[in-house]
Length: 358
Image (tube, rainbow, N blue to C red; front, side, top):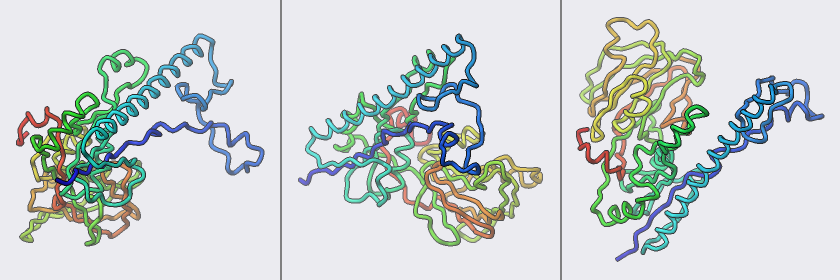
């Protein structure tokens, strides 16, 4: 029997890169006046290296408080990196003990579709799982490992200092504590992945290469600008809905899996994970007509697609966040549907217990 092949897809360690010292450019003798940065207020909780000038320093008591705050933040960030590294080390140790062929790759270093493996193990959080999904078709399952889960006690203790929530890992079936167990039942077939719907986008009739597992956002690249576009729903039979003309903050479309993310935060509803429908919402519509209101937040059925025409000089299609962006311009058309290959995801136990219709 051939040995199973596993790809370990890793969140990088440099997720909190040091920020440059604000005054560095201004103090350089070679800097031209036109290149000087605009003055800004110092960040009292910035990590070491950013610094606070004497001009911004307050009383000693306040300064001591800032030092304590910075120490807490730095300790927290250091611990996040340590926990993430420990989880990676554990996953590699487990794979090394198994009769498997495996390789590890950081998510920033992958640029080709993932082929010829039996399983992808994404170590990080939901963001890492989403990034991995962009390189997968419907043939290779993926298992997410939350490498840095939120600690409720820590969040409560630090709630007056900063937001100490860590990785949500909503779609991650494993953590460091149960990775080997979940890996074993996945490989022996007793824990089967669920096929999740994804979003297909065609730009001027050409298929975009990345399918969205969570959602897409169509908007002006500047969040302060109005997005101008029109849309209508079309059935596969050729039947059209009425045309809706929009001035708003953009259009968000989510899958069932993505309905618990930004869509839910914006006032949407949770969809059953097994659903092949898409949910869409016009963000902050400006003075919509009464007849249009029912169409501003609705679903796209499996046999439907949305036809969008863009009317700004510039725009963008954001796929699963900000990492994958496609530029659009005035007159471009988009076809949005659920006609994308599904993704096989090994889901956490609590989602499986809710049943396929949840």
